[in-house]
Amino acid sequence: MSKQRRLRMPVSRRDLLKAGAVTIPSVSLASTSSSAACYADPTYLTGIGQVATSCQVPTTLYSYNNTLQSSAHRSAHFNRSGAPLSRIRIVVPNFAVFAGTGAPRTWAARVEYPINSLNTVLWTESTPATSDGTFVATPNGLWSVSDELVLPTPIPDNAMFWVRLWQSAEAPAPSSTLPGLLFHDLTSNLAALDVNGQPGPFSNRTISNGLGETNYIFNPPAAIIDKPVYQRDSGNQTQTCLFNYWDQQDPAAAYIPWISTRPLAILGPTQKPSFTLWGDSRVVGLGDTYNGLSNNKGEVERSIGNEFAYINFGIPGQRADDFMGNLTGVQDAYNAYSHVAKSYTTNLIEDLGGADIISADRGRTPSDVFGTKQAIWNFWTAPTTTSTKTLSSIATLTLPCAASAVSGQWTTFDQANGTGNSNLDALNALLRANVNVRVFDVASVVSQIATGHSGSPQYLWKPNTPAFTVDGLHESQAGCYAILDSGVVNPHLLGS
Image (cartoon, rainbow, N blue to C red):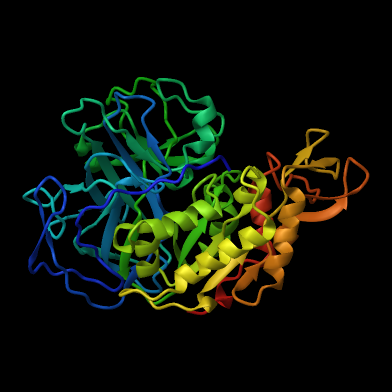
């Protein structure tokens, strides 16, 4: 939960696909940016929404190695639309957290189903795009929605498929400095990165390679996303699908397990609810690890992803007050966190406020944070041209403790209070007493008041083997499984 600086995305004119939209180009709109461009004014149909798992916002603009200009990623997703999926759209971003990258970003995409059967994604409805529509230059700070792709082989309900993305970051004139590549969840690696971009000790937390998710970050050409995948034994009997990139001048001659980056959204006709996740590193799943069976991770994804589609907008270190400031400080039509979330998904699961309490540098009380969370809920229900929602569509999570293990383990109550711990418990009391939105009491599953190392009652992690946390702050895989098994995060309890 590192400190996040409040950032705003620059605004430029853009046509945006809204909820239930199939775009049909009609008139042109003049650009308000310095470079002239025209954008189609779309018309809208109903029935389109988020249809898959494992879509996320980029959390890192990687600029540690300024020689990196392009990367490719093959991500695994599951169809949760409630029916075979034959029509699909891919949404790609050009921002990290709430900040633009400083330059347009070129994308190409393929939808893969079944394995090694590639379907080219076109962008003829997006401007600027190449003449044949196989690439799109996403404007700084915004996002691009692809044409509708009709799949020759429909993806069965609940079946796994893959999306291949290639991104290229050009240096904005007159600068010759590359703006950096977009990644998801590099925060867990930052402490151990070197100038050549070698992974840190938590690299196994950022990719579901057991499901065939793989990267190539060392300046691959776009043609890499048309390469076949193959199977190999990764050393632990796990068969992993990989790009055959050993001839692509990988300087480390090794597999680099970073997410570079997944789609922002995958859209299509849907018969089921879908979920927006707003939160910090616990929603990202920073302490969790993939199991090779699903691509869900963290305190929420594991409990909803086996049935429902979602977009994870979690940002490590994000405070509730900063998040609310950015929701209101960036116009809705240019703000993916509000426009994409409210337009393409039906429900919100929110887990903000922990970073406000634990950081403690702004003097925010539990009542202050609770008030901000209420404002966030009201923002979600504020009507827009693409969204009409009620408070019954929202759930919030109680907050597990922050504690240190005196003995070096969290398998006993030999723990000490962390910063803001008592205020976390006080905020939980306010949440449990509220009657506005549904409360998923995850804290009660993994934390409790008990006699700790000091001999007095403290808010601590419940002892368990394996431990429910690996660092005293984030739920471990065991902690996330405990939340899943408890059934406390129950998406069926939410309305619309």
